[in-house]
Image (cartoon, rainbow over the protein chains, first blue to last red):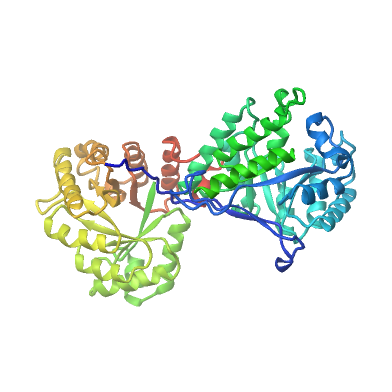
Length: 313
Length: 262
């Protein structure tokens, strides 16, 4: 007798989040992307629907990045010094489906650009590049509370994903996301209890749970990857069992973490690219819905990996 | 824990009157307040004064279905009333209840199967309420065996050990709690377990505390569901916290709000 596979029956479902609004939807993007919507654990296609493939966003900065390893910065060349050129290269040369722009230049230690200046930059960038956008602040709470509302307003109607809200600092950004029609990244420090708490705090502000994407905070391969994996798995199991307060898609900042690893900076052996790919693929198995990555070759390989898994289902 | 709100029962004055006067808003308000307080399903009982329970149950169910899609728990000792109600129920449905007697099982198990309903099985029979754990287990095994023979999914069966008032049957409380644990090992997959909680404090003076403590102990023994007053917020908080301790949901500082949001 053939062995019979035991299949779980899940009652919960991850929220589906759309990033980017097309002209028909009141924005000016060429297309939108959808993430989430799973009714099953990753890759277990027979236990429930997995309607959307995980997506990868190219990371672009408003200033020339500091301390990017040679293996990575060589690929982009002089485009790194011009964010418009950089984003255009991602869109045209590498076929990016979405862009994640990090406003690092507004950080007090990296140029301290004024919120108004960054808002003008965002407006111009949205005008030049018609892809769906993820907008990230500078990482400085006080500055981001001025910066993100200004940029959010400039991007009103474009249905961006903006971030990040944290347990200590979520009110201003949640209000902006709500007012301007964006979704919000809720960041927790590899802690499922705080991820859940933050989702509730944000939804208490009036932004529905269905507009939140969880950033569980990840570690790269060799730097706590398995810890992030277990947090994501725990939240996902609870969500699929019916807990709506953690039923959000996951965003994972793979590029940022992978290229910090000392192994990724070891010479020009393409080890950094491998590090980024392996970190990404492991997180896809943990349930990642949206990966923010850096090296175009790593992105190409991981996209192929996603296609292969989904095409063979 | 799966919470079934007990307040839509003709035995209560306000509900009895609302049924007699066909006062829809009164019933709907009662339904929604229970759901808001954390009820996953609503028990519906016409009460002893109803002259035409088969008709009254239909009106009650229709009235509730206008405002919610939560599960309806059709509560009657008469299979005909249950059949009348289940025919018009669009929401998920729970039959409350069969006993271990074959004439009731013979009607209600096929009915539950036909309507894909869950079924509550009381471990009582025409001989009355069992007086110890072994008698409860014997009746539970009879119900499980009957369901398994007729291919009714045992995981949709909710076995009720029948709570007894603590001031009447103090010696039985421990047996009732142990029965919950042992019901779960009668078969694989396990049947679910349920209790009509308010019985345990019937006639006692400090009812709320007795209900809360019994519920904690029953959940510790593996209880899956309870029929209770969800407007007793301390009771529902107690249930949520018990589930938390049993690792049934993820902790966060606002875990009480979180449970009610889900």
